[in-house]
Amino acid sequence: MTVLVTGGTGYIGSHTTVELIQKGYEVIIVDNLCNSSESVLDKIAEITGIRPKFYLVDLTEKEPTRKIFEENKIDAVIHFAGLKAVGESCVKPLEYYYNNIASSVVLAEVMAEFGCKKLIFSSSATVYGEPERVPITEDFPLSTTNPYGTTKLMIEKIYTDLAKADAEWNITLLRYFNPIGAHESGLIGENPNGIPNNLMPYIVKVAAGELYQLSVFGNDYPTHDGTGVRDYIHVTDLALGHIAAIEKLNEAGVHIYNLGTGNGYSVLDIVKAFEKSNNIKVPYVITARRPGDIPECLADPSKAERELGWKTKLGLEDMCRSAWNFAQKSLKK
Ligand SMILES: NC(=O)c1ccc[n+]([C@@H]2O[C@H](COP(=O)([O-])OP(=O)(O)OC[C@H]3O[C@@H](n4cnc5c(N)ncnc54)[C@H](O)[C@@H]3O)[C@@H](O)[C@H]2O)c1
Image (tube, helix red, strand yellow):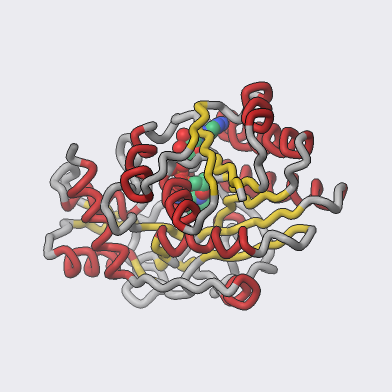
């Protein structure tokens, strides 16, 4: 089976590519490299022994996207490509709407033209907005608090309408919680440009001495230590969620799954776990709450376990150790 992985040189896409190759899938990657590097292909080759075929294409451009399907017989697509920084999306909403939505529409148009109607889409827990309670099940009301989240929700709706209009489509929407950590080899991991937006890459830079200290946004939330609680999931477990989803990509219609662990950890839990797992200090300071942050975001992942037979295996220590291992091995070079 040949799988086209869009955004495959990115963080989650590269980990999923490794797992796909190791399970015997043929993988083709398309990426415009706006937030990743072609050198990731060499790392994938080092881990798996196979360097996937690569197209340097912007998916908002239809003709180059068509060419990928003309030149290859593609059975299914996992669509990771997109811009993902919440804060940046508030500053550059048009860029986010255009890139994320146009690429998702062009991709589906081209897929339909070539009769490839199996699609897995990277959605996010952000589509639950400010949930009234946790854990969150897939049938919770949907809303968003920033343009990035709105692109995810709009793409979910576009793909749902597509599946309604044409019963041959088989679409799985995966709502990720908070992926962290890196491949055990230390060769691939999260490597954001500039100052990181997310907690783990920030902690890594503080531990490495590249940033002075971590700002913890608020310690007066109604959580066990007052800091925000999230459902962190090891990126390898998340990648394996895609394998489970692709193996079940047979039923027509739209299928939606939360991919999370169901365990909540606060910001300070993560700091302490990182310090303990890696025997290194992470200086931090408590600052004001960040607008738009919610106290707690936790998945109920039982639907994915029931229907896909998928369950996370890796714990917080693995997440913290692998993130630091990647930083030590790969980010300094
Ligand atoms: N990392 C997270 O915390 C998280 C959480 C929920 C959902 N997601 C979603 O998962 C997907 C993958 O996230 P990630 O963390 O691996 O991000 P990433 O930025 O590492 O990877 C995305 C890749 O898409 C590519 N890309 C962007 N626009 C493109 C375009 N128009 N054409 C071709 N390539 C394009 C980028 O160059 C990048 O390599 C994204 O859609 C993201 O919104 C991520």
